[in-house]
Length: 375
Image 1: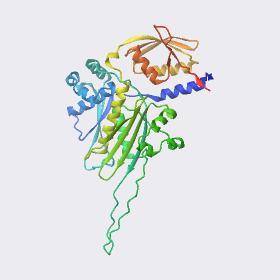
Image 2: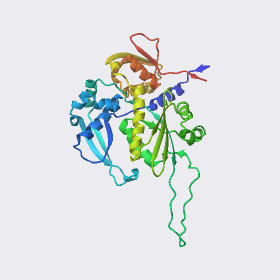
Image 3: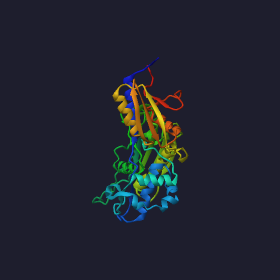
């Protein structure tokens, strides 16, 4: 039996809005080893990352684009700054590293994208559920010799414990900064009793499907990153499993001698950003500015109308919209899109907020806010 439950629908609606986050793709940060603000290579690297965040194109394709290489990047810069990285996040604390923060003018970014004919990556980013565990193995310490020259050695642990890594300071630092740099949005599970029974640290280590199943069933997230970290005195290894929608898990190993852990994590999140873009970017052929009429039914008062207005305002593929009328539980509006109607409907479907009525008139896009819930 099916019942229409308005209160539940509103809660689902608000929860669905929280699943997508509008990101600022006019800024980024790159890792550098000096504070030379006149270095053109720094601006080129930062601008390429900003274009990648806007378009979903690979950094290599962007760096090879003739329009990108001809433009005067500094003329589009709004502001820059340097931030020194605390040595506690570096294995080699004799070296200096900095974040080079860059903010560009939005018109400058959009102009380059149009000239180059790049794709488009909607600014409303799907949240990525992060499941992370670690194992740390360190050599025993050798104490000072006793008077009889006997050496006392701290005994080794037989089997290093695998544990959740949400409190790992080094990982959290680099994850936060690379996520901001690449416009990725992460969220963590509660790690309550329900999570721990289904997704143990050992299951994250083995990249088990249970974690992604928990992401979907409990948290309503379609993207999961399973990440296992193993540290020793000599090296750092990362192993990742990425689930996106209904695709098979993609497994990858990250390990490189002689580099900082933050640089390894750059590769981890670059790989994830590429996979995300390949799923959600809109091809240049589907970019077509035009207007559509939208009708949204089953609204209940001004609260629903305001929620819809906020939702449409934050949809980056809607350039502007205007409400024509609002009465008897529905609103009619015109929206200026930056993509084809087909691509727009794909985005709406992924957001899981408005439900497209395919039996609506040809010249309208008709949606419903109400869903039917099984009792």
